[in-house]
Length: 239
Ligand SMILES: *[C@@H]1O[C@H](CO)[C@@H](O)[C@H](O)[C@H]1NC(C)=O
Ligand SMILES: *[C@@H]1O[C@H](CO)[C@@H](O)[C@H](O)[C@H]1NC(C)=O
Image (cartoon, rainbow, N blue to C red):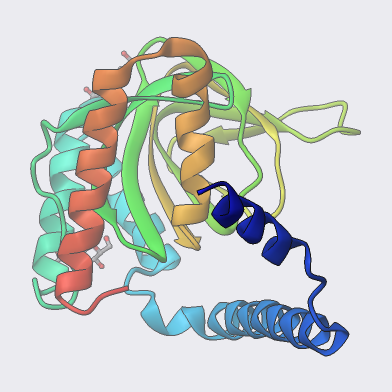
């Protein structure tokens, strides 16, 4: 027994052959380089998985406002029925349950969202609050198109001394890798479309809940709905 333990310790102390060390490190570096090149390649071709179109969504947001003035719920119905008419269920999976809202705390701002569509490369949500909120947009791996339906969004970047104003009917475009401070001034709701790498945005979406609100049932529901919609899209071959 004792000698067995000693034997094992002694075996572990034997230095590996220098050639083995080089082989081990060379293969680790090769895996990392391959991984980086795969990511760069996927990033270059990600456009081929996009289904939705920012220009169409902006026109749709404006049409929704025009068809249902002062009626946020009517605007949302207009948007969802347009999308279900426009796209077949084999092109894109859409969540048509307009009552499925969850709290969203992120970057210090708070509101609620209804997830219309979520995949690996795109999401489309209604986000807003009748109370107003303010925070950091987050620094994301996706381009973001924030179509204001109701109210006004204000924004600014460091160095700007005047704010940007986005009234209902306008779109605030935030290219990936850029961040701003924003405010949903008083009551404000928007149709938000993001395209890029969505899973990498999720830590930002969960951080405030994990470190502050501890609204675990809300977090659970958000993960269930997001996961369900991503899987529904994966099943129809939509990444
Ligand atoms: C959807 O909305 C767009 C933009 O308003 C419009 O051009 C298109 O005709 C609508 N499609 C349907 C099926 O209603
Ligand atoms: C919408 O609300 C505004 C402000 O309350 C009011 O002036 C306007 O007439 C309303 N428009 C419609 C179509 O109800």
